[in-house]
Amino acid sequence: MLLPSENEYIIIGDVHGCIDELKSLLQKQGFSINPQGLLQITPENEHKSIILLGDFVDKGSHEKIKETIEFIHKNYQHLNNQRKRFYLIEGNHEDMVYRYITNDPTLVITPKSLANKEKYYNTVALLEETPHLHKLFLELYEVTDVWYKYVHDENFSVTFTHAPSEEKYLSKNTTEARKKMIKCVSRSKNPLMPLDELIPYIHQEAKENEHYHIFGHLSQENIRQYKNKICIDTSAIYGADLSCVIVKGNQLSFDSVPFENKQKKGSQSYNKLFDF
Ligand SMILES: [Mn+2]
Image 1 (cartoon, rainbow, N blue to C red):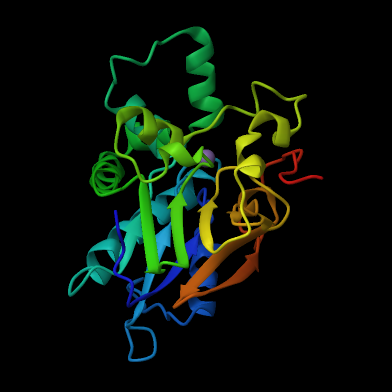
Image 2 (image 1 turned 120 degrees about the vertical axis):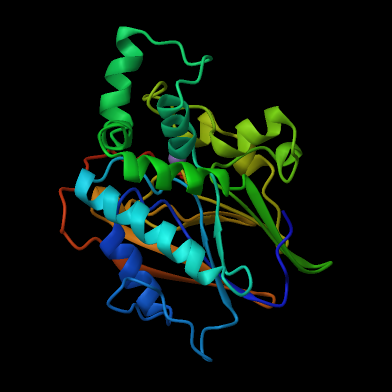
């Protein structure tokens, strides 16, 4: 979906229940939050829009995932009241949680998949025991998009997707392309393979131009950029940072906030992108 180019965008990487860090990052970017948990629109920030790059659920604690869903839902309605200011991109975690809670018939249930459901998709149990959150999640899922594209002019554009994907799939709406933009080949199934070998297309297709592709999904120690390819998943839930990119006119800038230790962090051995 094409984004209106006259606005400024704050695009935030994989939240995974890091609600405190999400609020801190938004506050750092000029949004104060009122006692009801609503982001305040002011003359200083009214031209700014917020995009979450996918994977706002799972990995965090149930308590924090609950707060995250409620905060996003409330502010999605609030910020989009007058014009659209809040956008959600679908990540593989939203996709899988949706499939589990709607009993997707294409999900093959095996002992392994049930173990995975508990291990990787802990939001499912939370939604199954909390009808109110189940409803909020479904409403959010319905309004997600798989990609957004910002075009400033013929020299500068930015495409946003959750996962890195080959360029031939970017901004396409076929079932295959949508799948590829939501999830790439799994690292956990190929633990010994360097990431740059696992998804070689990302560096091979990278170009020295200002038609950027910004994605998350691959938790990294810091923002990773190679030419026009940028990963902004900086592992908030693993105790590192929650990061965003700000798009204004034909300029990109970055910002981050650290993990606040208000919930247990996950453990992760980093598999570095653009490690050459
Ligand atoms: Mn992901």
